Every structure is written in C-alpha cells, then in structure tokens.
Amino acid sequence: MSSSAYAAAPESARPEIRNEYGLFIGGTWCAPQSGRYDVTIDPAREEPIARIAYGGSDDVARAVRSARKAYERWWAPMKPATRAKYLFRIGRAITERSREIAVLESIDGGKPIREARDFDVPTAAAHFFYYAGWADKLEWVLRAGRRPQPLGVCGAIVPWNFPLLMAAWKIAPALACGNTVVLKPAETTPMTALLLAEIARDADLPPGVLNVVTGDGATGAALVAHPGLDKVAFTGSTEVGREIARALAGRETRLTLELGGKAAHILFADAPLDQAIEGVVRGIYFNQGHVCCAGSRLLVEESIFDEIVARLQQRIDRLRLGDPLDKNTDIGAINSRSQLERIDELVRSGVDQGATLMQQRCDLPERGYFYRASFFTNVQSAHRIAREEIFGPVLAVMTFRTPEEAIEKANDTPYGLSAGVWTERGSTNMAVAQRLTAGVVWCNTFNRFDPASPFGGFRESGFGREGGVHGLSEYLA
Ligand code: NAD
Image 1 (tube, rainbow, N blue to C red):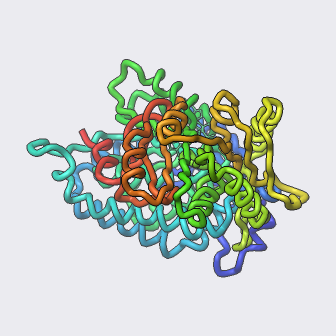
Image 2: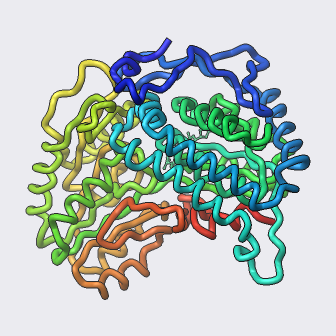
C-alpha cells in the first residue's frame, strides 16, 4: 500500500514507505494491544498511504512506563552536554534526510512540497539545534538561585497542520531539559512522527526517551488521563484544549495549551503595498490556511479598500493550485474530507449572511480535497466568517477609518494568538502593536518564525509559550 504520489516523487527523495507501522515504545516497534490498524490517506489523491497502529489505553500505559524508566535510569541523570549531543544528532539527521521528510510531509498532509522543503523541515531541525545549545546552560533559564530540574514524563499531543514541526517544538525543549516524552501525532498525519522515531533510534537515543503512540482523540484522551504524566503539552483546537484543561483540573500535571486563532492583519494606507499584498497572501494562503496564526481577518484603511480588493483578486488568480508534490504549487490539498466540509460550510454561512465571496479563478483537480483561495468583502464583525476559525484558505476583508477603530476591531475576538500591522510609520506600528491582544505581533511582515522567539496566545488561544528561552521554562520545575 502506498499512494501513487510515491512514484511521482523524484527518485533521490523517495521516502521508504512501509505497508504497516507499529507503535514506537521503549526504542522498538510494537503491535498495538487491540490489533487495530487505521489507514492514513494522501488527501491530494484520496489514496491510502499506509496502515497505522491504533494505540489504546494499554499501549499508552506501556509508553508512559517506558518513558518513566528512561527518565529515571538514563536521561535525567545524564550529563547535560551529553544530552545535547543526541539533540544535535537528531537535528543533523533531519537535515540530511530533509528531502525525503519533505516529500512524506507533503504526501501525508497535502501541503505544497515547497513549503515542506523550505519551512517545515529546516525549521524543525533548527529547533533541535537551538535547544541542543541550551541543554548545558539551563541555570540561565530560571531566576538566579533556582536550580533547574526536569519535570519528568511529558505527553505531547500535536495537530495535523505542521506535524513534524509541532512535534519538534515540544520534543526538543523537553529533551534538552532532561524530560522524556510520549508523542501522540494527529490521526491524519502520523508519517513524519514515525520517521522521527526512526531517526531517534538511529541516533542511538536511549530507549524510552521518545515514544510515539499513534491513534485518534481517544488515544490523546487516554494519554492525558494517565496519572504517570508530569506535563501535557497540547497544540490543537480550543474545544479539545478546554477538555484537556478540565481533565487535568485538580492534578499536579503541568499544562501548556497552544490553541486556535483568528488573527487581524491591519493594513494602513501608507504601507508599502507591494510587500503588504504579498504579506497578506502569505498570511492567509500559506499551508492552505491551515495555520493557527493565519491572518484570516484583513482590516484595510477605507481609502485604499478598492485598490486592495482589485490587487488581491489579481494576486489569487496567479496562485497555482494543484499537486502538492509539484514544486510550483502554491495551494495544495486540504488535509481531510471533514476539514474540506467544514470550510465549505463556513463559506456558505458567509454567503447566507450577506458577505460577498471572491474566489481564485482556476480548475480544480478531478480527485482530492481542494479548495480555491477565497476572500470575502462586505463582512460584518458579527458574521461567523469574521469570528470563527475557518482553518482554510479564506480571508474576511473589513475596513477601518482610524487607528482606534482598527485596534478595537482587531481585539474583537475571543482569540489572542497573533496579529500583523503594515504601515510606513514606525511610531504607528509600535503604538498599534502594543495595544493588540495577541501573543505575537508581526510588523511589516507575517508568519515569520525563529526557534529563538517565543510563540503562544492569550484568551481562547491558550497559555504558555513555545520557542526561545520562554519555551524552556515550561519544561523545568
Ligand atoms: P484537534 O484539537 O482536533 O486535535 C489535535 C490533537 O489532539 C490530535 O492529535 C487529536 O487526535 C488530539 N485529540 C483530539 N481529541 C482529544 C482529546 N479529547 N484529548 C486529547 N487529545 C485529543 O485539532 P486539529 O484539528 O488536529 O488541529 C487544528 C487546530 O490546531 C486549530 O484550531 C489550530 O488553530 C490549532 N493549532 C494551534 C497552534 C498553536 O501553536 N497555537 C498550532 C497549530 C495548530
């Protein structure tokens, strides 16, 4: 079993895809107790890629036991500089196998190969390198006088939009601090987490330091419910984040939640418009809009509204939608049928509520889950498309007259993950950015990431920070 995309990939970058994958526990592959396997699908071709073990609560318990043993026997007592060597090795292996990993990420998730190759994979490797450098300098993370101690066993639960990168965001700092990890990838994108397990084994990471238990929401819930966890690091929807917070209430288990967003992208009339349009396009259509911090609400100063709408339509008509493995593709496949249906339902609600829909003029492939780059005008703040996270290539364009109105509209959301401001004036940029309730504010750019800079939200976008030195303190007692 494997998708025909496999044959289409250049020979030098063909990932080895097995028919069936077990769970990675205690440094070896093992069968799930239940004997159940689910199939992961290539969303661009609607073809099966491989059969993936379904982890139940017994498997989760086995993984937590193995992580505990590894924590006590090997990983926590190890010299920090030695731990760093393993992280460097993993970072190097990701870099060496980057083409193969990028192809796998693209086939399993539907994202354009160019993005997987130029963003997901190198940024994941960069996190391992960055945190490897911190492993023997942890006394600088906490306030003076506090001795840094690892927490113990961490459960890491990740979504499907950046499968490898979200895993790296959690595993690299956790391991650098001396913790061990049980990783639960998303059900639709397990492939690169399994490849990461193979990389960890090839790097001679001691058995049990990293365990990968594949499965669905019930597997994640079993992991959260396990009393042997010292920390849960979750990235995913606000709804599931709330459930996890409830499940952990009254327990000592530490928790960080990276949840949804509905970012405002504020565009002043004096902004450098050529760059700003590119920023807006990257802000919403990158990874088909499957991005928690996507700039999904565009607030345009009224005087340039007509010009921006005309330029946006021209620009989306030039985006190439199609085979994610084609390096010229800008818009790949939507990750799953259910996500496609959710996008479609929200777009129909926008039309029904009176907004005007503009879409990329192009043909759709005959097979696969695809959605045209789209934007709405005539949007009101109360419309669902202005309030709910669509998690697809759909932008809501609104206007403002004064900076005050822009700030008010930008903050009129239950989320608080990210925002963007475009203006030629540095003073406006700083003054507006300071008043936005968002964990990250990009000025005259959007969707830029670096392992050294912290990322995380306020309000319904969660709490805790990943990345940078802030990300380390989340894994230390
Ligand atoms: P999701 O919440 O449905 O699933 C995320 C993960 O949680 C999956 O691995 C899933 O199997 C697991 N899960 C589901 N139910 C669970 C439960 N009851 N207990 C424990 N685990 C459970 O989210 P998704 O649809 O996979 O991802 C999209 C969401 O992720 C969006 O809302 C997006 O904004 C968010 N996201 C946030 C960030 C961030 O850094 N803030 C980054 C990427 C994605």
